[in-house]
Length: 329
Image 1 (tube, rainbow, N blue to C red):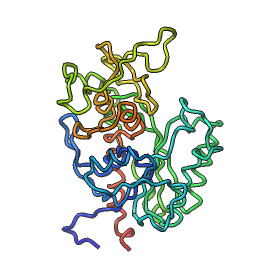
Image 2 (image 1 turned 90 degrees about the vertical axis):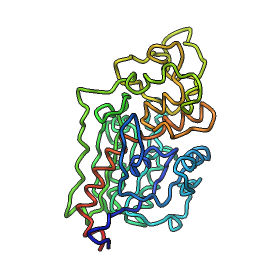
Image 3 (image 1 turned 120 degrees about the vertical axis):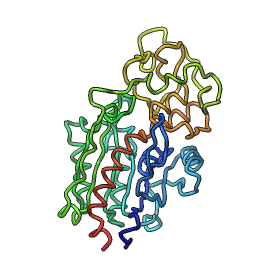
Image 4 (image 1 turned 180 degrees about the horizontal axis):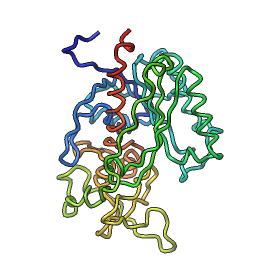
């Protein structure tokens, strides 16, 4: 057990890590738009995703080989490190309003069960899952209740936070659900962590705030700023992605299935660049995306905005510090 002079740290395993947005928020130690996000007391022991390019991006930024290409539906759970915290944005395609809406009746829609397998085997103190807002609407809310019940059945209490990203300083109209799972013995003494304080209600950051300084940069002096789709607007209708962003408002949601349908800039007659999409998602400028445009924007769109993840991670850290005596036993 650490002495009073030593800083407590908490081990983390990350499922469905993608390129690392949620993980970066939990780690901290990054700079975004002239603000430093301090190191948080989380130590990521291992991260897993089945997409090779995501793992390449992840390891390229974090500078380690702690992320691995794995199919979590068939992984040997005993080979995964035991950690105090499990995090994971389980696949959202079957729950997204833009997806096939297969829900938990599909194989991909049941991948949240991989979190449950880990919980059952390793009994982490806290589990943080993330998914799209549409999940709570499916089948009149029964899909969400089924997932909550399944998570609870391995010895946890579950609370779901609905977070609207602009309320937390993210310059993008994105809403997400966070599943906060606390092991029963910890919950009985400490309840749930406090929901992050929404400090930007009534003062949302705009897309211009996020990317206005990039407007005259047309090369890669800022990584990925020279990459964007040349696709024109649809000749008929106004398909998703053909809208122009509004200068004084948060941006449209950066989607995970972009192809060439990334929304247009607020004042330039072109679609957003890879770096502009990353800025809108609150990735720092030194987080470089090395793959083709479609793959990179897909990684960005699939990610949890690091600054939003940081808000969640800070309140989880405060909670764990309060409960550290029982955790250390």
